[in-house]
Length: 334
Ligand code: A2P
Image (cartoon, rainbow, N blue to C red):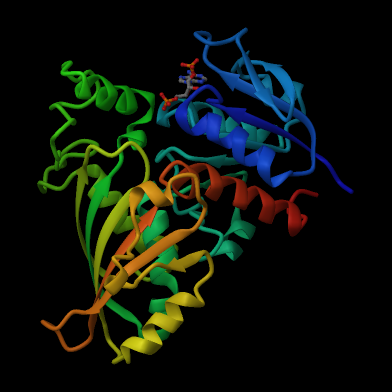
C-alpha cells in the first residue's frame, strides 16, 4: 500500500492538535510524519500515535527537504499566504484551514460530503471552509438537490474555541471574573454579535465568509443569503439557526427523510422527549446534528433548522483530514 509523507503546520494550535488526534484515529497510511510551528514552540514535543515528535520551525525548505506529499495547515492566514505556494511548488498538496485562499477562483473549497470532485481541480492548494459554513452546507446540500434553495437566513451561536486558544482562555478567565484578552468584550455571561472584523456594509467578515463560501461550495451564485454571526459563552461546538426558502414545494416528512439520508447528517428531533441538537452532545463528534425541523409558515415553501457540530472537528480538522483521505483513496498524488 502506498504511504505518504504528511506534515501538520501550526501543530501546536487548537486546530493543529486536533489534526493530530483525527489523523491518529482515522489511521491514514503515513510514511513519515512532521509537525511544524513557529520559532516560539520549535523544540517542544507532541505525541502522535504513541511516539514523541519534535516541533520543527517552519521555513522555506521544510517541504522540499522532507518530501512532503500532504501538508495540513492551520497557522493563520499570513503563514498560509507565504508558505502554501512554497509547499505546492515543492510537490505537496496543501489543505489550508485559514481563510487566505478560500475565495481564490483557482483554489477548490471543499466539504467532502458536498463537493469532493472539486478536489481534482487543485493546483497544489485546497481550502478548508469556515467552520460555520461547513456544518451548514452538509445539512443544506441534500435539501438544495431536492427542492432548490432560493434564500437562506443564517444566525449562528459560535463557541469560543473558534477563536483559537485565546478564545478558550478568555471564557475560562471570564468565568473567574477576569477581563478579556482576545475578545473586545467579556464573553462570560454575554453574547457578542461580532466575529472577525467589520466591513463597510456593516456586516462582519465572518458573515460575508458564510455567504460567499456557501455559494462557492454549492456551485450556485444565485443563492440569496444573509447572516448574523454571534460569539456565545460555549467552549465547543457551533449552533446555527438556519431558515431556508425553496423554489419547490415539499412534504415535511419527505424533507426530514431527505435530510436523514444526507451524508454526514444525524437527525435529533423529538421535541416531545426534549430531544434536539445540543453543543455539549456534539462535542468530540464528526457528524452534523439537525433538529427543530419545522415549516416556516410565513412563506410558501420554507423550513427552519437547528444545526450543531463540533467546530474544531467537523468544522476544521476532520473536514481537512477527510479531504486528505479522498486524495489518497482517489490516488490524486501521482
Ligand atoms: P506557535 O505555537 O509556535 O505559536 P491558534 O490558532 O490555536 O492560536 O494556533 C496557531 C498555530 O499557528 C500555532 O501552532 C502557532 O505556532 C502556529 N503559527 C503561528 N505563526 C506561525 C509561523 N509564522 N510559522 C509557523 N507556525 C506559526
